[in-house]
Length: 308
Image (cartoon, rainbow, N blue to C red; front, top):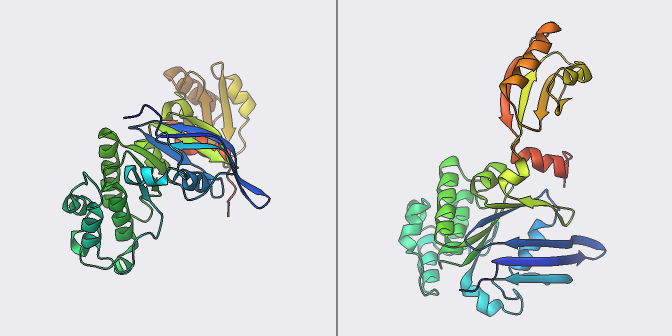
């Protein structure tokens, strides 16, 4: 097996008219790892993934998938790469179980179709045409079709969108098994919990560029947050002055307070906050310690405004 990364992108540019959907993006995804690509709507992540899949030609930069060009070497890559689309790609009249069994014949070492049907809870709809499956059943069938050939690399675009909790956890377990078996997974998702659980490496994309990349620990850091509720408009400068050096405080929304310190929350910080509140006749409610989450990082980098 080649030592080349599963995916290697350098300076990728993709234009649609005068608009740059991707503007010089670079990233690397390792083999046998889950790489999550996150970003708000219109950030360029889908265009990036579709370029890796060979569906779009780059206008600039280079893209290599398993060491090969995804457009020029598409024929060689096809049996080695699995692709799960958000919708479509499966004939509407195809019956679920029959479709998987036919698909399995195209691969040298396929996963047993009946095993996938059982793992993904498709037994009851095996004879149902694709067009009559529920949205969740269509999602699970698309996932099964993407992984049945034991690919070296699989692209999963929103694999758990619309799934109930049981199906979501079954999907996560299957992805973890794929990684353990040596498959590289490129995961595009809007579910921060999904990325936190599955990803070895996280890439946040915005405005066609990589905003930040790293492990969950690298992105979120080790510092915790102390949160509490109280009357709106507390004097935060006075509060910070009473806290250990390196502390910061903010109020958002009104009446909700967050204290952060570089070295993390410790008993000394908790005591200082509660003592200051007591000295000023303030009742601190719902006091709790939280870790910085991936969603916190995502919103800090990409903003809170809605994207179309």
